[in-house]
Image 1 (cartoon, rainbow, N blue to C red):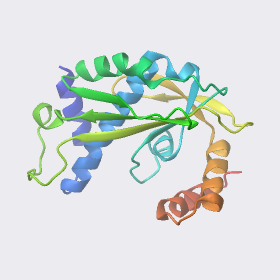
Image 2: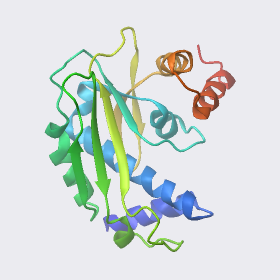
Image 3: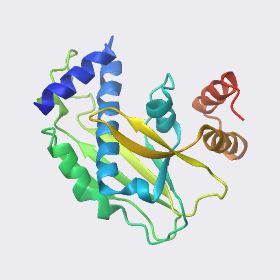
Image 4: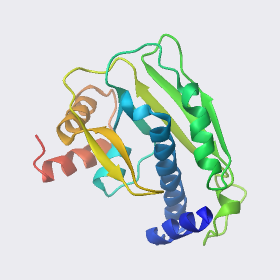
Length: 206
């Protein structure tokens, strides 16, 4: 059964506390979302980028919150809801209930959507008790840059959960360039930026 696949995946994380278990559940949801986006054809027109790309594709040793993408070619007409049906069906195939909502604004190049899932607690056997004050839903933000910078290079990478599928993603040099831009241009300091920067440097990324 598909629920057993999810349970086995959760066990692989070997979470030591409730926070690690919550993060593992969210990452499982992220991978299911990527599989659904693959089926919906997103990677024919966009590349995976950002911290979660580093985490899932390149095994960066920190969890990441959002799923970020950049179109291969500028297109202000990009519309997230065109992909929602495939996403909802992907989650439903694992016995999960997904709510998808478009939060894009017409005057912004970065189009946003949110995915909410509230049934993991019924499908999975969780090891750490949940309190009423704990998050009851898994929330994933999707962002796609519809007017991306030029000269980024993409490659095909493969993910093996929840089943083998391929994603188009920015290569390490392009990801590193994006991180340098964040470090130089972000108006405030994020510790994760420096963590990622040191990860790139340790691998002599250029």
